[in-house]
Length: 273
Length: 251
Image (cartoon, rainbow over the protein chains, first blue to last red):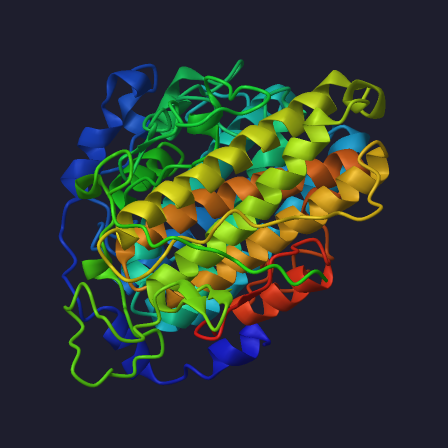
């Protein structure tokens, strides 16, 4: 099925209205500011944190747990990634020649995701925020390739967890759910590649952000240490296996969701307005 | 393909972690197609008639329908992956086939992950089906024919096929899951399969192949999503699973 043709069939405003019929948008911008003031982000100048007075037109929607809010969150994260990679590819001397094809492929996908989600949301699409990927100069993102890759890893691993966290909000919208899953797995491919380029495993070990990842990115990994999957302990699997199972395989083999609020607070680090 | 009769004992006792920890049948759609079975309500935990629960029908194991069918389907795929990687890492010439320790580490991790996935589904289904007339899919029999587990390219190409198939399968199954907890579980696993696929593709072909245009649509940026029936046909065509089974209630 051609997804764009499918999405064009949603010309009726009523469809998108139905996406917002459950729950309400809470004006909870205060929670963003609060989330940003965690110890992990203490090093960041407070002026760079997401403004509490942001208007609806330019800000990220409050977590409302509807299909609409799920797609709006997704689009905001895709705007972020899309612009980040565009800027990286445009930064002279940043990306080594041997890695350009990888970054270009990722960039191509993020651009496609933005287009797809904007078309799906139409007039309900949030505007693209203004980003600062240097976080007020705290990160030398576009002048230091190692920093660029570290930020890329944070974005991709966040994207995987954020989409996963929104799946439940899309359970009533089967077509959108499937599309979200199809984006989510692509972000996971990206994450694996970036991580491995940085010398890490493609999968997340415990809640480790990994060598060279700035402290502010620990929020991306908290919760990944979970070993209890619906009562099944992934670090204590009954049975005998040859070779014996590793100590960290349990945390690695399941990725964990994050809430819309957490995804928002992570992204907000890079949003100026 | 060998015609193996599957002898399955109905599971009547809870799994090792106790029934209360498991996603219970009450949340499952017992009639996968939405059809009402006469005399049964959706809230019935132990429907005695054909409720589309996984189990043997006419001598063959049927994966079942509804959420239980999707879980069983996932369990079957994880059994295949776990078996494959178990053979890869236990091959007597593993170190010679994969002299690069980074590649060996990847394959050992994939073995770990797929075994854990498989054992998770086994436990989840054991708990969920306890006290019902449904039964847990038995250990399937696998035969790889002449597949050379000591050939690096062959192993990696097969791994790539299995991982990409897993991604398509989970992506396609999501819309059929009715219980939100199960959907989260499927979500937690599919991204790991995608991480696997990315790593295997990269060590096999490098460049942009981790998320190549052959897997991720170059226009939409989407991975594929395929129905259970399509995936099962593809997997059957590999001729690896020897145990006959049916999936009459899955889309």
